[in-house]
Length: 149
Image 1 (tube, rainbow, N blue to C red):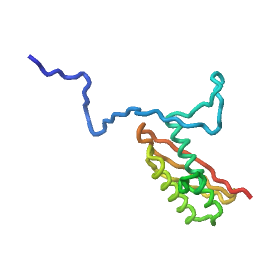
Image 2 (cartoon, helix red, strand yellow):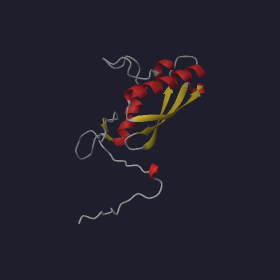
Image 3 (cartoon, helix red, strand yellow):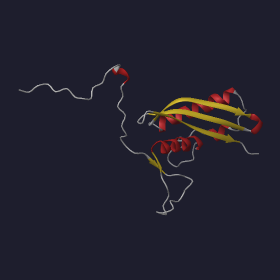
Image 4 (tube, rainbow, N blue to C red):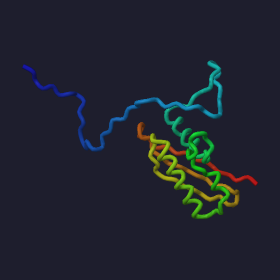
């Protein structure tokens, strides 16, 4: 009576590499440049991976005690700008970045942090490579921390 019906969609080959990726929740964030939509006359929000990249950037440029009721939310990179330039300062920066992103940004997994010392310009060029877990995509955020005299 009831016969077994095979689906026309079957997985062939190496099943361990098969993934199902779906967007569960759209992410939105406020763009701090506050660009106005020409028709709606409203602020244009950032969506999905751009929202996550913006959140990462905001965490990196925040210092300790910048946010009320969250004194440890931030990487405190500006505080490290005035430390002597060297490997110890770079290690501290890398640790601060990894700690704040692991604690406050659960949507990503940090793949690497590259710090280039630009001593001639009194600056650091920081590149953070990460994977967005939900979308299974790799993104990066680059910031330049500059010390002004």
